[in-house]
Image (cartoon, rainbow, N blue to C red; front, side):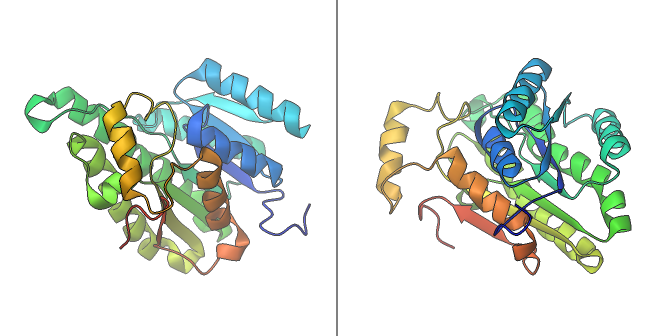
Length: 253
């Protein structure tokens, strides 16, 4: 395993929003490649169940935490406990996210605040919490999950698009701040992926979306996970401040 291409053998990886969907796929791929994965999700029961299932598949025990990434104190407590157990954190994947879609004229301020708090402030909270230990060990990989909506915008998603565009800016700022300590910070921008966040999209939007995707299909959570695993690996050591679109060619920039 240690000589495997794109191996994550022995790395300690914290993955937020990893009880289901893209986050779970990332956790599973990381575990397959030898990482010690920490499952973090707001739904503690689901996080524990996911950790147990991945542990059963891999034959290694993984831990889980119930955390609201928008709450800095909760994030810090979780990171402190991970460090107490593993003594280091090599990889952070900021995947936790939520949506509250609506046209801006109908969007409640509370829905704006919630989406920005989880999708953008959550990335800030988790990144800030891991930066000091990563700087001390002079090694780290931070991978943030943005979205094509953050690159091109999406009608009815003013809050979500703004939050994911903010993730892009934060990624680039942190890449400049942390590069001298050999900490890379990159983002992955998924296109249309079948998850809990996309299952309630109107059927018309789902159908018309295919017309704008050169590959003619939606992606899978595993295809996002493979891209994240690459950016988290040692093979990607000279890549930082980059936004990798995994969208079938939907947004070309």
